[in-house]
Image (cartoon, rainbow, N blue to C red; front, side):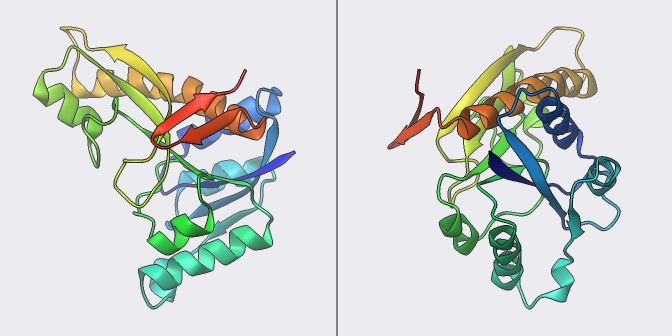
Length: 201
């Protein structure tokens, strides 16, 4: 069974969706570790309630970005982690981190990449006036939301939408899509060739 670590900085709603899917047997793996860079992150509390090992790792305790990433990498290796899932982790990973887990780090982004990468993807799409947006699960490389795309789900923008209502519907899509992508990884159903990520039957 694959061992999953979730890195989160905030409320942890995607973490909750992953934990619930794993409990229902919809993910062929287990969440073995949750790490946050924020002491008060609700994600840590969600993990604690389920008896999942959770750690607050304070970036201020380290000499810089690479030293912090190295400390997390060492923790992940100590816990024999197979897949790292970013769930609202508000730090750009260093090349050191990415190279330690090649095509073993996933992220969920609230737009249909490559459109609207970076922060505030929902707000960017809404104010641009698109008619369809959505969410993307992708592998993490050294760029900003540039890694191979695993799964995407479209979400229509309706005329009555606000940024908040659109965000809510995209969140619902994320909570379906992310556990599905993680399960595909855990069952070794993903194959990356260049920029293309294919699902193996």
